[in-house]
Image (cartoon, rainbow, N blue to C red; front, side):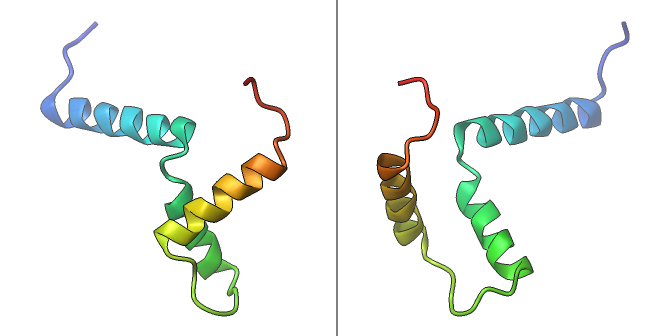
Length: 68
């Protein structure tokens, strides 16, 4: 197995970070903004604070399937 070059290591690290953010939900706001823009939603998108308040309320009142 060959050694990774600096570029390959950075790219692998970026992949790990991107995957981790997705698993933890840290990229939800960025995905919301992207969705808002690509679907031509009316009005301004929620700011970060409004988005997370809405998300926490949604999860509290519609728990769906979660472990805890």
